[in-house]
Every structure is written in C-alpha cells, then in structure tokens.
Image (tube, rainbow, N blue to C red):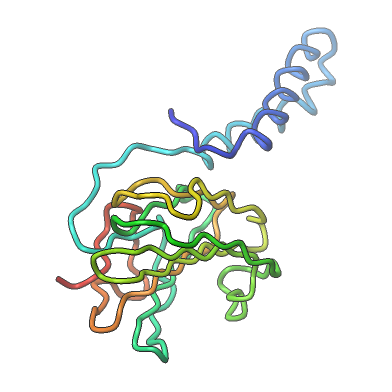
Length: 203
C-alpha cells in the first residue's frame, strides 16, 4: 500500500513505539497495555495516510479532494466556490483539478476551527493559483480542528498535470475550488467526490 508523502513525522515514532512495546510484552505482559493501543493507532494511521493510485477522470475540472460537497456558493466576482469536506476516513492527498502552472502557492496563518464551521475560512490554509486554459483557477486547502498541518508537494512555478498529487492535509479537513465565471458546477451539496476522478463542472 502506497503511503502519502509527508506522514513520516507522525507515523514513524508511533510505529517504532508499537514495535518496541510489542517486544517488551514478551518479557512482561503488562506492556500489552501500551502495545495494543499503539498497534491500533499505527494501523489507523496506515489507513488514514493511504495514497491509492487513480485512473484520472474525464472533464475540464476534476475534484481536488475526496469527500462530500459541503456547500456551493456564488462569489461576488462571478466565480462559484465548491467546498469539499474531508473527514478523517477519506484519502487526505489532494490532486490538481486541471493541468497548468502553479503560479502561486501561499501559506496563510490562521485558526483551527472545525472545517464545517462557517468561520473556518479563516483557518490555517494554503492558497493555490493555477494558470490554465480556463484562466486563473484558485484552490484552497484548509486545516481543521484536528488537521493542523498542510504539506504542499509543489512550489511556485511548477508545471502540473490534471489529477497529479499536489499536497496533503493530515487527518482531513476542507478543500475549496473556485469555478470560473460562466462555468456551473456538475455536483450538488451532499454529493461524494473522488480526487482526480469526479468531474465538478458542466461541460
């Protein structure tokens, strides 16, 4: 099973502690009180940080995240924001919604409210801008109450293919994608999305 880049600071210490306490259990069964939960936590983290290969979907704009469409909002400048909520059981690796160049990858400090909170727009986040055939496309990775670390895989100026892995939000949260003016969403609130597979714009 492939694991996401950027998980080692969390996974390796946990796995090492689980292995050490498992060995100590052979000498004294009381160590099982630590070994069992640590082993369960390691297994959970392996699942949380999985990074499966994908057959990239067809469409001008694909979902950047696994999750559920939380809201669809018209923006004052004519764009439409599609917010996708990622729970801790979703794949946490985000993908490029379409091909282009990453013209800006900006980290913005902020709070850590739950991602479903209406004020979570002010959370810790990474704001992406892609130069594409449809013009400038903005995407925002938003940290939540648990996921307090966003790991971009690319930097300013990088060329990106549609569906390419571009970053990780540890333990889920929210990803917003702004559809350009004149492009309507092909998804509705409550729909499930798969990163790099689900088309989110009408053709």
